[in-house]
Image (cartoon, rainbow, N blue to C red):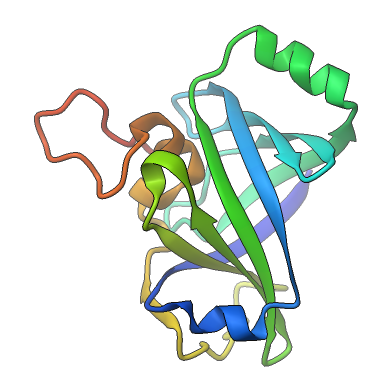
Length: 169
């Protein structure tokens, strides 16, 4: 398994669009989420399909193990036909900034209005410069895990007392 080290931030405005090199459409479906925080998902990214298995996150949310491989669209549809536990659709923008590649996800459907920036790091010690459009850091806040967003299915988040609440995945 590969190790993923990543920080997440809310986005303050759409100034990132000016620097975006490209974008892709993504719909990802969560096949299984276990109590430890591991997930299995199928991601449809433009004309490609990927199966991803992620292990639980570290307590600070920075690190998790991940395996991803491309599968055929038919395999993806077969997996979805067996059921899923939620989905997330978004447009992902790729923005180079200060020697890092930032990925900004603009969410759609029930999550409209939510924009999250992620940056993958080469090590735990890496300290990337933050672009001006980056806001509050939400690394480790389980409400902003895509798997939790897929289950909650709405933004802004439901208030306490409603049935769907994010969990630590």
